[in-house]
Amino acid sequence: MEKIRVLYKEEEIINRTKEIADELYSKYGDDEVVFVCTLKGAVFFACDLLKNYKGDGRIEFLRVSSYEGESSTGKINLKLPLDAEKINGKHVVVVEDIVDTGYTLEFITDYINDMYPASLITCALLDKKARRVVSIDPDYSGFIIDDLFVIGYGLDYDQKYRNLPYIGVVEKD
Ligand code: IMP
Image 1 (cartoon, rainbow, N blue to C red):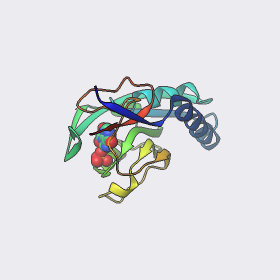
Image 2 (image 1 turned 180 degrees about the vertical axis):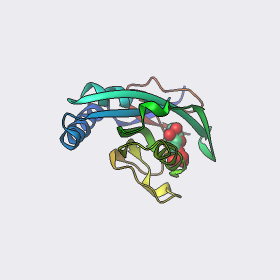
Image 3 (image 1 turned 120 degrees about the horizontal axis):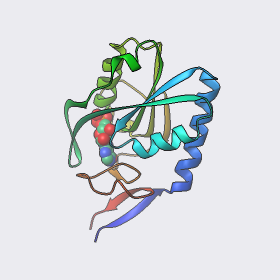
Image 4 (image 1 turned 90 degrees about the vertical axis):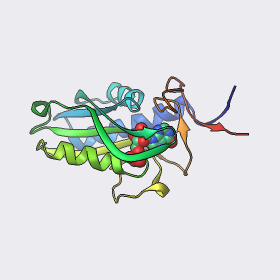
């Protein structure tokens, strides 16, 4: 059985998510906002964000993939597209689990911008800033972390560990 070191407990994650939800509400007020949850990793974070968002928040889902094991393949595949009608002319917030090299976030923002939203911002639970290859930063991030492979709270290692109610690091012997 692997040993997992806890980085962020559920309570810390939820408190930080509430702060972001309130910041977003002060930005949009009562305007309709479409939160685009990127599957599968951002699903826990997106649910927390939506539950704590006091305005008119809608939800749509997008699935892309680039990771195999612990490394990005660099090539992004669109697995579940968005319905352009739900995006065109809307205020859109992309909800990501983690930004690493930045290839995925860049792909997603280009993809959504082609649908002509009224505005587009991005929000990631975690930001591995030191690993960035593409010059892109999320507009909002929960926590900036070191170059560690993290799991839990939606994040996986080969589909495992998503269900952990905290963010952790697998300790290798
Ligand atoms: P990027 O394209 O390199 O920025 O990678 C972004 C995607 O890779 C995220 O949406 C995650 O699915 C995955 N990813 C990057 N770092 C980690 C990690 O530490 N744990 C789990 N998944 C990760």
